[in-house]
Length: 144
Image (cartoon, rainbow, N blue to C red; front, side):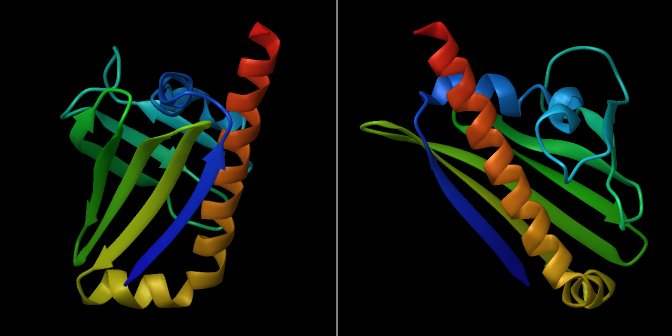
């Protein structure tokens, strides 16, 4: 089961990346996140684990599995019988960037959870996209 949401942002990929890769500050710009806490200090890198708290969802630990600066990252959350993959990608456009958020629910328990929480999942992806766009464009406009 896969959920995807894309949004065009009038900001360069470097600006979008700077905001998206600073995961501990997500709660400042998206109502979908209560708190993200890195389990080790330092920047977003492959192998970094983070505890993500969201309203109406159980706390989840995510581990970064792929990362390309200014292009995006993938992280995976595993629990007994469940696996969820989150993909955050940035595509350069002539007038800015396109950010795409994808959540992939695999395994029987994750599929059931994804189906039960599908409306909330879609709402949270949209909140994240809108918040990322607003914060990125705010920074670009501030620099002008």
